[in-house]
Image (tube, rainbow, N blue to C red):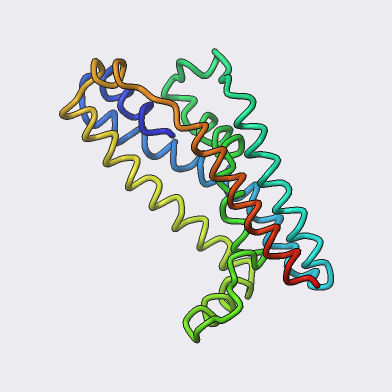
Length: 197
């Protein structure tokens, strides 16, 4: 969600270097927000006897957050204009508000496992649950992918489309994002309830 701010930085300073410079504080804020949500859940894996209740609670949390985002679509007006010096803080807050770490939580809680796993999936599952280092690595890879995709999109819009197209064709993805959270949480909850018995 930070790429429009990178476009804005490039358009305000009228140079592509400002666009790319904006990606660093956006990355830092997003990574910090992801860590804040993700690391406590990664630490909870040590409590193996609580795994099932934690899985159910995480599923309900994802569903609840999806319902909240679906019902509450307003964004504070203060976030409409972000100064370049505030990009890390903005990215951190948005990563928390939009659940950047929450989407990685099901991996750590075993919600993404299938009943018939091949050797590759079993090895990946063992790596994911192995330690805190894996949580850090997954968060860094997530942020790198987010910055690469968002930065490329920001550069394309800045270079070829400009502000007029962005202003005319802007659309809000919050509803589809909220519905996807609800669906993923519901599938994870159903899987846990079925496998519990």
